[in-house]
Image (cartoon, rainbow, N blue to C red; front, side):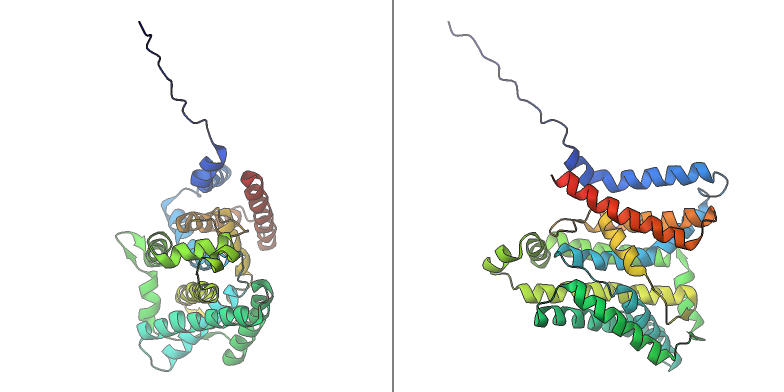
Amino acid sequence: MGSATSVKQRSPGFNFARFWEQYGTFFILAIIVTIFASLSPAYFLTSNNLTQILVQSAVTVLIGMGEFFAILVAGIDLSVGAILALSGMVTAKLMLAGWDPLLAALVGGVLVGGALGAINGCLVNWTGLHPFIITLGTNAIFRGVTLVISDASSVYGFSFGFVNFFAASVLGIPVPVIFALLVAGLLWFLTTWTRLGRNIYALGGNKSSAFYSGIDVKFHMLVVFVISGICAGLAGVVSTARLGAAEPLAGMGFETYAIASAIIGGTSFFGGKGRIFSVVIGGLIIGTINNGLNILQVQTYYQLVVMGGLIIAAVALDRLISK
């Protein structure tokens, strides 16, 4: 008489790398919120301050999502801050010239931002240089052009309707936040459900393999930098509306925030790995840190120290977990 043998299926053990990839960014945000809430219990968690954090984070989220695409292909875009400033300046100039605010925003944010991103992509493809070198140079060029067309002065006095639109709320949600989430949803769809998105991930994973698989490497590199430019251009439009003026030095140093948003959001600096909505949380983390340090009256230059440390820690952690 044969004996029945039961085979026990072993459930896979806890995988920290997989857990961190899925929930690590939320875990970091929760820790930071807890710290600032304990240090400033009377103000930090008030509804007004939380709304302010979301509005302040909208610009960071937009440029962070653009930077995400550049890093996804193992590159980088150091010109996002300058594109933000130039796009915002063009938008303001067009409105002062009598253009409809919506049309001016589309031209300044989408067309100008996309064109500047295309310049980056074309230079990377034509020269074969690393994007770090190209965008380091174009960052200076775009910033210089902004100073030239503005005569190094702020531009203001444009449509109040434009400013009021971005200062409004829909169902209690500020328009800049809705705007950033709509862009995030569109980019999530692109990366998740389109062939273009899959090809970009493949390109970041291994450029040589992608090439031999029939992927047009130069075309996809161009698309990546166009997306980065458009996101920075839209951030310029939002920033100009929030300030009520176009500043020639707007976005100075914002490439640090953009890179931090992407890296803290789990995007691998070595390419091929990352998610849009994690970058959104990464941008929210940057906004929360800036807001919390301001509440605690920590001077601005200490905030740069914190950002730099976070970037180093995030890349080191990514390398450690990947091993």
